Amino acid sequence: MNTEDFQFFVRVADLGSISKAAKEANISVSVASQRIQRLEQNLQLRLFHRTTRKLTLTDEGAKLLEHGKVWIHDFLSLNESLKLKDQALSGTLRISTSATFGAKVLTEVIAKFSLLHPELKIYVDMNDQNIDLIQNGMDLAIRIGKLKSSSLIARLLTPNQRLLCASPTYIEHYGEPQTLSELRSHRCILQQHENGLTDHWDFVDAKGDRQQITVHGYFTSNSGEGIRQAALNGLGISNHSIWHVTDDLKTGKLVQVLKEYQVEPTAIYAVLPNREFVPPKVQQLLNYLTDYFQNDYLKQIIQ
Image (cartoon, rainbow, N blue to C red; front, side):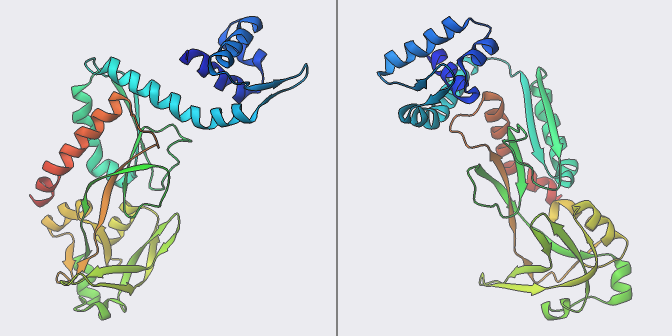
């Protein structure tokens, strides 16, 4: 089967018109019709009902379109991977990440990757609210936390350790909680997510048992960096990924509280659109990120 004919069939079906697809492809309507007829002959299927005023898919054509789009995408991606395996990366790589993680961690990692591939253009969307990867044409996203079930493909890069901290100023004014029960009466800094307010924090003990504590506060933000700044200014106890506040802990601007209680960790994931074969530029970045998070990330956090 001619893959170009199949791709043209997809465009005709999407546009609902052979003439529109022909104009888009810069070919005559007669040539366009010949492509569809040739595909039908090769498949021994009738793909369209044709009248002088309307073009509609047959049941077989609709089924072929539904499953064939995935097949042709995977086939072309695999073909591209095989052709470009040993060639320099080029084109544009579009990445999505949270604003805080992007500025604090990911930009430096992506910069090092970019220096290895000078012909590759990279666009990084930094947004604390998760965007739709397919709708926004993203090749890959780095996401932190519990992922929703979806058609996207997620690869675990590393666990994401979390802790509670506060500024010395806050502790001086309000004291330091000694138990999880005491935490309920403290001023905590809350985060507003796209799915609602996070007003409960989860902990795990040495046995792995989970305990959830409802917390209260007078400052809320939808920005991780906004929460960090509020903590630095003494507005309350905050719940952070360790990578976000490690420098503040080293300098004493923030102090870890309730050290003996382990905040339940989350995870850092690379998320891809739902496709079996990915372009070489995406695969190479994914390999690079996997190597970084398995070998260098924790060393930098612990230093």
